[in-house]
Image (cartoon, rainbow, N blue to C red):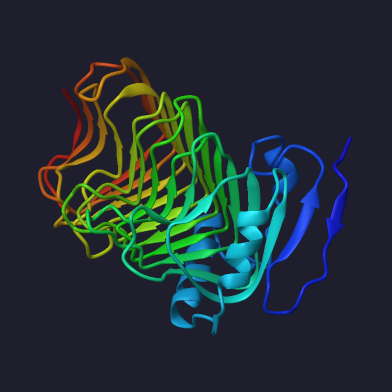
Length: 339
């Protein structure tokens, strides 16, 4: 039975809460039912791929951030929200810092919504607590920094996390997840621009603990020194996504250093000539776990770094590598796999 939805009328400057009488949308009940983006966030119809639409939207958001709004009403609504609530946030820029999410809820931007770090953080702009699931839609996260250089747009200490139609710009980590071992992380139609502190220990996304990570139809551009996607989850899927060093010095496009099942399919990968690592994809068990299998299929891979390697397979996992278009602009030989 579909949950009863009640809309509460509030002042224009406040958040609008939709109370649900069933399990939160933050969980993964039916992703297909949530394909419709909020506020036209899918981007222009002439974009050739979902990640191109996501990047175009991110560029627009970066160029013209919305006016600042008082964040106190939003903070109050989120803190008072019950399990299953949907908090709909009106257009505007909200200065937030270490906002604890204590119930499993959905936060949905309506129009052009930015969450900017109000100060140097302890953890993240949003911080779902242990046991809590969060779904966030159509929000731009900006300028998250912390004293330990690990500030995140979303610092996820909770259970499941779904990020849809969001943008992460100039954070030390776009998303840093240290939550549950059985948690599920899903990122869809979202863009990560210039994230990373620049020390190699912060990344576009970094999942320390989870059962599975799925990155779908998204884009990572110009990650600073760190990896675009770093996952220690049991299963890691990257599909239909742009992984572009741009003019930066990004490290691995995808780093999976706890083994597991890895699927890298139908992506566009661009390694810059000054990339911090020769290797594009890394797979090992240096952080524990077990070697399972790796699938690298249907990708377009552009290499501009001399002496590069497509895959470092230090755990000697079973590999399926097929139907990839490889453009080696650096010349010489692009090594397919090394151990």
